[in-house]
Image (cartoon, rainbow over all chains, first blue to last red):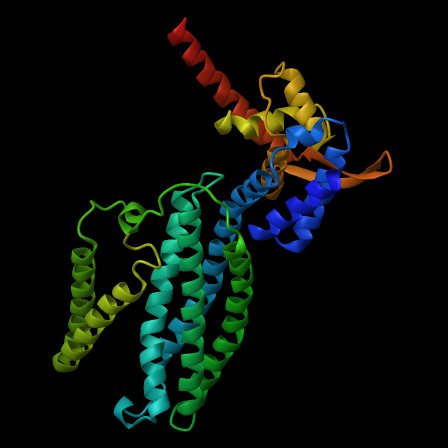
Length: 281
Length: 99
């Protein structure tokens, strides 16, 4: 009886995503418990119930730690990105319209990907800081894990884009900028990959806990409105900022083009990832 | 009981280290059977408290079987004291209202 219970529990634990090493410990402890007295098996709870309790209790903490770790790794990558981005102004690049196609594509990715990464990573962190309960609904954990995963994935895309830019422009740019950029990529990328490991563990945990996933308005505490209206306002604001910065630098036409592109990219991002990342229901 | 599991588990370990079965037995005994929960669901909470640094655990041998024993960490003792004060204040307030 005990053996068949433990076999069933092992299957249920695997089903909710408990890693094999942890499963072995759980099974050893449960076996000790079940052999402690004759009635223990009847009082222990159904395997599915126990397995779900493990996934529920461990899920919130695992997701929280993964989000925090990702944010630290993204912070390091962000610092290197900022140094490279600011340094690019002094690196003597030729005009972007003369760059090879790969460098131009890398430039676009290097501008858009970090924005997605920053938004997703920040929102993952906001959600984990806002919801400190030991057990969270499955839908919320899914949102946190997705935000963390997307933040890391786009962080890695950013680093690849930076590396491509540095390599493609190495003959036309200051050597120090190429070196700084590549060193930053070499340090940041492994950190981002390492931060993805606990995120993968967290994403594998699949507790069944009822509850709503929440959305952007819950996270930011804003008065609830139509999410598309909100996204449009944010896109408009971003576009205006880009336009104003370019205007101050004496290139309002370029600013208008880039600002429009930024606003469109923001809306496209909201359309593509809004539901997936729990920005809207 | 759901909101007070941590306080109850930490309290059972206050007197000294116990294995999971011992925690359940003590919980049942001290509550005179009032906290008669599915015993297997105590372990996930113990794991979470351990992951939070409030408990530590180690393997021992007993009756020829491997046994995981839990004990309060320094941080766990601090949390227990804090939670107990909170609970006392809450229960006194409820007591004052309902009696």
